[in-house]
Length: 597
Image (cartoon, rainbow, N blue to C red; front, side, top):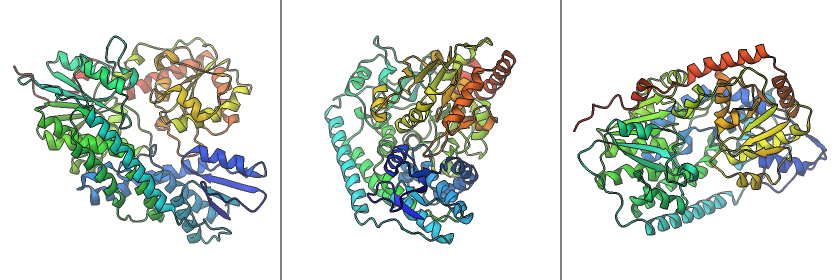
């Protein structure tokens, strides 16, 4: 067997045979497929890796929990990718699942002739796994003498970029940031602000917690909005609009000092030693994978931003801000835990409610609170979930109190119900938030658009985290049959006959409306299927033929089948999304004392 790194320059000596790709991004897969040519037949391991992920997920959760217990007293630990255990942002869990799949194939003598690994750490770990399984390598992975020097150079470049961004933010900081009035209880609403979150007439449209700020004002709170940047940077035009807005936006850039940026950089370099070591997982040596992961997390923009987020509450406290209540968007990511740590340090008596308003899939362990996180103060004081199913998942560990509150961003599901009559044969493609995964999905669907599926129109809804032009540039081409849709998701769902998705919570919304769904499986990386809890509502489709067959069946549904889907959707809506009502709204502030003069 030949084992190669995806970014290596050498190629196989043989002229053909079976090959497989182990990697997190499909761009390398497509590059090697073109490079190897028609003489090599690719073995798709995605289904086997998905099975391995289901088996490994609980063991992985326990493994990370043990690391949390060991390193959790260090605040910088909670800003690492290892502790975040986010399978959508880090390749670590995927790589462990790939090793488990490779070990099983080696034991069953089903190895391809060529294996291409995306990353030096994965190639090294794969070689060790094969040796332990008694399999000889015809060509072991080439040594990487300059690998660590290259990693260090990348980290130095990222540090320089961050330092330049910090210098610009400090230079543009206003001389007198927002003043805080005493005598009225205040609430801090921590949410994300996009370019399109503020309309031309100045209205702030909170995509994540719509209507909550206004309701808090009605309850007597003076409400401030902590605008969390998505990637550690912000467009200058958006910053100016927020500073001039009637909404009381609090921008981190207005309060952070040079020492905060320096501390964030120092924490990034410190993460090169976190974790210093880890035990095997399911008999797999994670050492080579962790060695690569430590370099990735050290240069992570999200990690740098999380370290800044942790310091924001302290700076606000120094400026006289003293919230009685904080409500923050919560998915258990680095930034969420950093904010929880900062609030506990700066405002130890204040209430902090995290809002879990998504449906985590079985392998998305990030969003589930754990005892080690609670002991370290890296969680909100309580969690408000948008539905009963999520509350059940979040309360299993008993880490923090869990309640059910209004599913704010899903309120339209009670106003918009699909008719039973057959809709126009429109296929809606809802793209995920990660640009490379969106490009992979379009590439996978391109051949389907020319197949006999019954679809007359292909409508593509990009995620708001990136511009449509960025998607076109990443892809390099665009299928002629596909048209971009710029409206809201609720508008896109209103007249489509079938939805295709991958790694997007939009599949849940479509299911609630009784729309047939198909999830396009990843060719590289892990599938994200939040509907896996509910049987076969959204099967994972791994080939153009499977996708085309799903489309034909969906468009051929008769009225009884569509009515059955609609009834099942109503049950799903009941389980996962709490209607907006006075009682469900009260869950956000119910643990806080009544208003005082």
